Amino acid sequence: MTERLVVDGVSKSYRGERRHETIEALRDVSLEVAPGGSLGIVGQSGSGKSTLARLILGAERPDSGSIRLGNVRVDQLDRRGLRAHWRRVQLVFQDPYAALNPLTSVRTALERPLTNHRHLRGAERERALAELLTTVGLVPVEQFAPKLPHQLSGGQRQRVVIARALAASPEVLVADEPVSMLDVSLRAGILELLASLRRERGISLIYITHDLLSARVVTDELVVLREGAIVERGPTVSVLRQPTSAYTKALLDAVPVLPRSTQAST
Ligand SMILES: Nc1ncnc2c1ncn2[C@@H]1O[C@H](COP(=O)(O)OP(=O)(O)OP(=O)(O)O)[C@@H](O)[C@H]1O
Image (cartoon, rainbow, N blue to C red; front, side, top):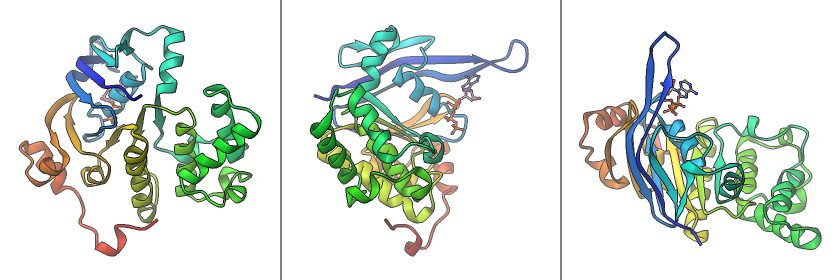
């Protein structure tokens, strides 16, 4: 069962390069993602998006505030607790080229988490593998399973990365700019896939992006981060239609308007 994720009053600072310089990466950030809900975290480079993702994953701890998934305090987990957490919360990376080992076939990349997280072997694992590849649209399965990353397109690689994240049966997917390195023609297909995973599997989705319009495809709610603080939040449709903060308006104004024919493809 998917549980509620609650980030409550979280702040995080880093030491800057200059002496006595402190970078406040997050300032008193609070947000919630309901079970099976979707939240877009939007902001320019340096606004704190990836820092927030690392804290939600438990890869770093906040200076103050708390992060809970159900009744688990993510910010207080020990090593063993983190291992369990990393099954529940999976990250989809920005760069599908870097995320996959170039010498590892699709089959091996997926068998590992199926074995390690779900303890599947033999025919059961084979069934799960076929189901994963089918879910992410890499069919026929026998054609894609033996492939190495370089034999796949960028979009297909990102589908493998998503399948690998799903292999652990996570409750929450954190997708950090999952389409920004893909050709424009491939982006809509990956965003649709993320949206369908939420609809059909009830996985909660945190979608991190600097691209406000792409958030419309996959999220119901948005928070807009500026210099580590939330400057706007609300239903995605309302924020996009009637942004209240000048910063969100500026982000929207910066979005290039593409001709319709280049907006969507597989
Ligand atoms: N480990 C770190 N050490 C020092 N400063 C850091 C560290 N991680 C992040 N920062 C700083 O914190 C601020 C927020 O960074 P963060 O990566 O979270 O932003 P972002 O919105 O994800 O940006 P981008 O879209 O470029 O990835 C930036 O000023 C960054 O330089």
